[in-house]
Image (cartoon, rainbow, N blue to C red; front, top):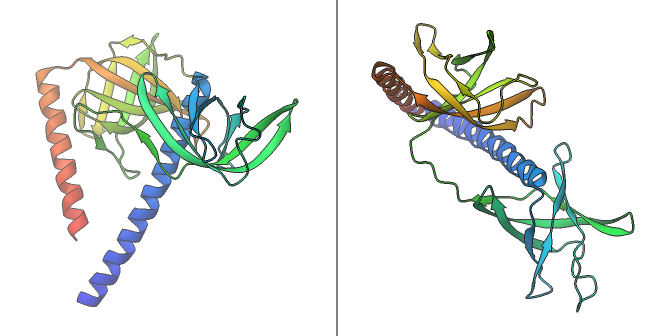
Length: 248
């Protein structure tokens, strides 16, 4: 029995590790796509110079998992970037510092300018801080958000929830935008357990692995004390259940 249990734990840890890798890759691609859309300048450090250069992230290929950087101009140095170089890039995303390292895989000539095709970063440092505990709901969760706008209802899976807000996914094309204040929202946490907050849409992001979906991050602007107590109990019991299952 002990030998069987040890083998089971080893398999579970391997599955958990693989799932974390997938989640991290998806998160990195989401951040890179946001940097690309922002068109904000990135500071680049190369191994061939002590100077900092400026570049733009102009492409993210989610299938090949590579990124493309715009050409840089170096007055005192010829070919400051070469294939095989490890580049350190830093910048901000909506005011929050972000940095990562990437490897140059290929240098292409496009329209008379160099384009650097680089690997997906192994890790990214994004210094965003969360003020509250966030409960991530796994694939087995049936929790749903039902959002009403212009007398129409839109349903989608809840991804995570905290005492201050929730993240959920809806199909692409739903007429809900950043800044919308929505009075009619139901969060069906379990088949027999729901809360009804008023919400403000804070961000809308593409879902890399599911291009027909978008992920909405919202904050609660109105939540009854009874609903808050229900939410706290749900989060506490879900976390306890996760801990019990992890020990089995």
